[in-house]
Image (cartoon, rainbow, N blue to C red; front, side):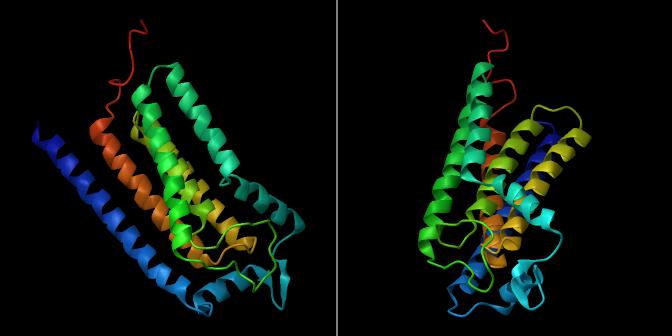
Amino acid sequence: MPQTLWNRIEFSLLAAGIIIAGALWGFVELSEIARDAAPHAFDTDILLAFRVAGEPNNPIGPSWLEEAMRDITALGSAAVLIYITAITIIYLCMIRRWGAALFVFVSVAGGQVLSSLLKLGIDRPRPDLVSHLAQVHTMSFPSGHAMLSAVTYLTLGALLARFLPGRATTLFVFGVAVLTTLMVGISRVYLGVHWPSDVLAGWCAGFAWATLCWLVSRYFLRPGEEADQDMR
């Protein structure tokens, strides 16, 4: 194996390890905040910053912004993420990318299971400091929207990056995936259905899981190997 290629692999392993370790450390620290009986000042200050001063039921910004935030938060809903994932898997199967299809399914489904288990670990109620501008039915920590949007969009971004030409295209795809994930998380705080620490924890868990899946794919999913290139 050429030395330059080996150096790149070592750097990828190191970078992935740092991301996973940092994300897990962040999640543990945020879980301690979530276990506190009283809301942390960090959470309350940011949550109230999205509301008009003295009016906890009135979000900042024009009326259309509230509706836009509901549209953005839908990008992290289970229905939308399942729809996007299913379409991706069906397409990959149609072009006989069996390995890639399995990778997407295991990554996203595994992230969903992990998110559900993490919510069972800490029974944190939803914020009662401000009104909820969207319907919610589960516990607050961590944010499932933030975590699953990170898992889904970053996983799909990593998959696309393996087959797209040029570094600029790769950076663009990852940029869109990260931006979408961030917007979904911010929308959850704006709508008052999550504490900021819930969203940060969701991002930490989602980024750690997506990075782990990406690392596994580098060694078990080779471009072209999972496809029948001759389409026989």
